[in-house]
Image (tube, rainbow, N blue to C red; front, side):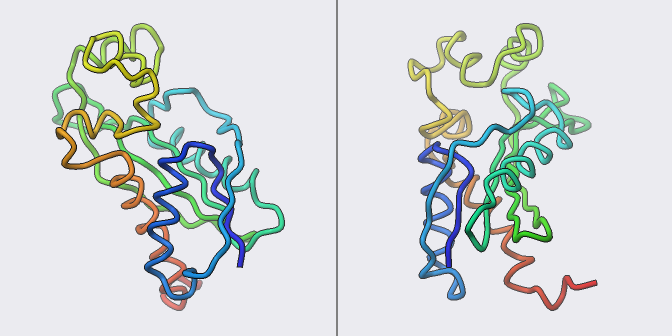
Length: 179
């Protein structure tokens, strides 16, 4: 069995590797990664855009494999929050016919960060760097904004793994999701 992760971001690749090792039907899969464009903005600002980016990645990377995994983090509108937006991660698994979607936990960034993202059109990495909250220009390739805000209690890999596990619900319980 072969799996392609549609990203060269090692956090995403490691998250998929760690999760699939827990699933008997995937445990012996050969995993490779491919740099694939999402086809959406650098910082998705809606759930639709984020899921579309993950779908684009998964479908574009599906070649000579059983499953391809597209992973995209982004912002989504959430009523009653301080900024109106929360960050989450979407994972789309494509099997050549259907997509299987999962989401992670969500968290809210500080208002000053969101203003920078929305007014300057930059991504969270740049906004956290500009605010002086990190010196890592590749925060998304490390513990991520969530790791910074939770002081390492939840990392980008953790929330990516959550999204992957939620998407795997469909594959592990395929008899329940057949139409």
